[in-house]
Image (cartoon, rainbow, N blue to C red):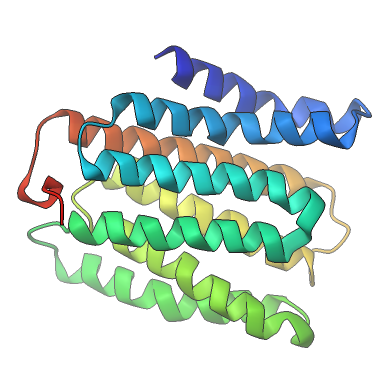
Length: 215
């Protein structure tokens, strides 16, 4: 619980660092502290492969937060993409036994819609790379939505992560120069990661399901 509380404080307070004129290193440490501590919380809760997969997802996210500084969108984006691929594995291992038609349709439509919107928001030169990343991101959100983890936590959290990255792409195009976009990006991203962790850890803590067995 201490790691989770510290994660919330670190992630929520990161907004405050933007106007402090901190050295780049200190700012990156502050930025990575929120999701990094979510990874610690996931590790402390891990009892099965699924728990460690969640820890890996959050570790990749924290790495992406930090690497965006020195390596830019390519280096940071690669770390996030790795996290999305691990998350897809986690969610597919924990597919919901039954879903309604509307739930399946939303998951199916999320993928082409997410990719199309992302590609249309960025300049033409960036569309190939953004398209590849957006495919992994959208698949992550879609598989989270049809997983056995609660939609009000993990499902909504994954959609918030998707929305956050779409705002990043929009800042490369139609929303360039809008100051409020940065707050939307970080707020949606960190809150989304927090909800994902809460949904997965609480579900796994209730006991093992067949999908929890190692592959």
